[in-house]
Image (cartoon, rainbow, N blue to C red; front, side, top):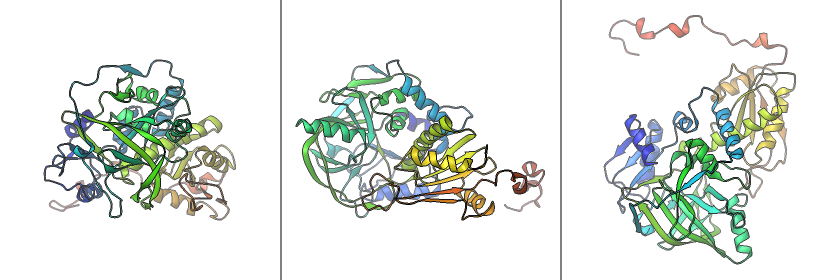
Length: 444
């Protein structure tokens, strides 16, 4: 991640904050203002209470995120789906065992930036923490994002969820009365960051995906306490274990959907070692921001694209912007009812996220919801092209059926009547430069 920050700086994207910033609310407020002003990455060099620099908004830009995957001209969803296929079929070792970095320093959680983001948050949270664990039976590594609430120097409280692989590992360890060794990775190389945000089939080593993205094996070293394979370039590593049969209050916390998740009894991580590289850069992530959503959207779009391309013809691209629970599919219609078949596949592809599915054609920008909705309301009857599926279970964290149901919007042209819906164009528009037509001194 440090090399990524340097890359952003060299390309003139990084904003550097030299003024002292309070980790309680102020850092989050400055981050939000910067996102509103242009969504550029930030580096805080003077955060009160810590010697570590803090970087944030590093993966919010779609083009930057795309550069982690590849530099081809194919749609992003298709490119990422291809990498997923390669990772799942990979036979070469995804990691290389190396010595622990020589500049590792040991300390306490209190040495790290303890950032409180929202007014009602129960305390400081580590929001960009990737939890590394190994399957208790097979030893296959798994990485996933989980919020971690700071309680004191020896304890963090984690929300694992019920459907994550990590929750399954913990249940199996707990069943035999054992703690689950874990490492919190903060500040990892971009390929590892992307791999951790991608759910792979059970038994697939997520380092395989990181290696495919990096185009080479990932250098790892054995954690001094847990012996888990830690990426050598990780800025901060927090080793410990999730205690069996122990749940303690965690939350509330301002989560990805933009609301507070109320207090609940969640898992307890006992801290055994905290280490960081000399000059470490700590990664902070403002939940629900573009940095948080961009990866979720990209991963879900790739999974949906792969499922669609395997089952239906005419699939061009998929977007899950502006929110990861919305899916827009761009198709080249092959038959009447094609859009309806697309919706069936989408709703089955990812039960947690695909609440709304819109289907458009090539002449509509699937990343522009204004264009998508305009196509829907101008290309035929909105009642017959709206599909409502009542009671279908939704978001995995939903306990009140607030996310039950599905809605599909067919924004394609009526099949066989495409010539009646040709988008109007002005000839020569692309060649016009407005400043060439203005009186000298006029401003645009």
